[in-house]
Image 1: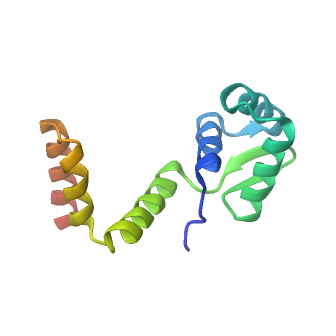
Image 2: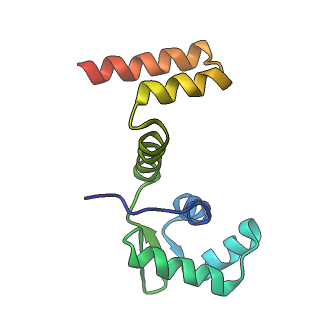
Length: 119
């Protein structure tokens, strides 16, 4: 199943949800007012839209995610690589490292990912 698209402001909302879930919709309203400066109606609109797209569920005023942070990140990363680099992960990494050199720790972590992928 394809991961539903989550737009930037929705992603910020999801970050709050992932940190606090399961959470009541009333508590989400308070958190979104504090962290995103959203009105109550905005929070409820985003809950409704994300529920319709299968990103979260809201039952008995309790909101939980149906998509994990890792799933959302993987989907968004793949979209950027596809759209910007014609699907070339090496092209993405080359462009990324031109602006931000990798630390030795990051290189080791990436190498470990590659080694695990190969085996």
